[in-house]
Length: 486
Image 1: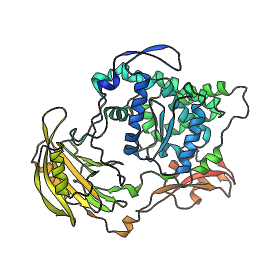
Image 2 (image 1 turned 90 degrees about the horizontal axis):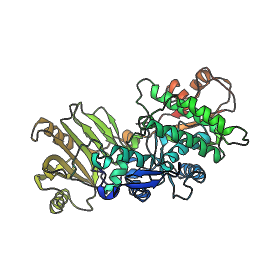
Image 3 (image 1 turned 45 degrees about the horizontal axis):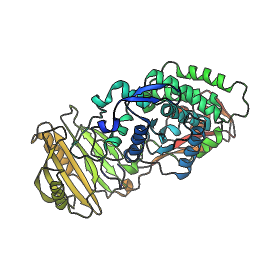
Image 4 (image 1 turned 30 degrees about the horizontal axis):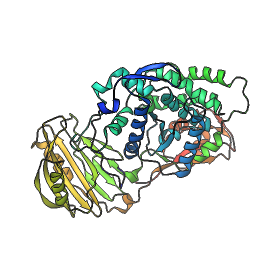
């Protein structure tokens, strides 16, 4: 959960009929063919444009202007040689630890710090961005929306709190839902081809691209690690590494002077945050600490928890209850005044509770009756806590209002208190450190002698796309991860 960001209360996403409009035909920029589509090019632009601020709130922008500028420069170099060179392209590096990259219609390309840390050359970065550009130019999202008839089915992500707390426009909600759409294998094959084509036209050596898929495969096969988000939404249409190797070989044939820029790329990664950033909050069991916002609280024992940029969430194992903590846009109002304003504004039908003090801070705790968008009403329990200039909203819902699970939600909300532990307040993240080797040997021999490291040797091998018995030489640059503290 990041400081200073407004609450994201919507987790049920649906495409509005007004957004999709009437079915028609549009010309595919890549194939040149007219295609039946429920989404026009103008509507693609609207989805991407309105989804942009929503994505930034959900994931956060990685605060490194030089690295952002680097990603942007490589992206625009590729976009100029794409099938839509005149589109207003946007390339954004997200502050997210997952290994992922994704595209939204209208020229909006996103790449995470998690995946860029695993890339070992500028040409590899070009391959990833070129692949995502290909999804846009070939209108793959519009095709998926049309083929799956999402206008009727809706785009959904399971939610915890109320549909009644609505934040984003229909277009923005649709854009967020699109992130979770899976492309078809044919789409992936075409995006691979376009990625190789665009990278080569932009002057990059496409023979660097296949090794990117080798790294992604190793990450997904790593024992105890979840599949990279990139692979979960970009299904492998076959042996991607072998197939892109052949595409790259054909594209590079007869060409000279193609760019790789591995050393320069790796050096740009010095200091990049690796993994979860504890400054934005972290769990130890059910105990949550947030150094930047200066608070801690205890979530119900045994519940599944997740910390995101917009919300901290917890769900009972059998999904009979859930809760989330967010920041509310309450101005200078007291907790009681804010609850009253929710009633006046119709966001809450009825509020039953009392002012109280939680963790030494002014608060309001009780139950809220909320009108749901699908009809009917829902009962939510929780608290609003004023800490300095921020209002913390802690609300949850049980399938059986008034039961022990609802009691657990209220008890958790009342555990909120200021974080006073100096050690936890000074928490720092793990970071990528670029090392120039002073000795030669095998990777497995040399790397363990490079000082304290946050990753295992195997994970460091994956980070560098290397093997333990691979020879390395003095003067070579490698990436290791230095441990932070918390």
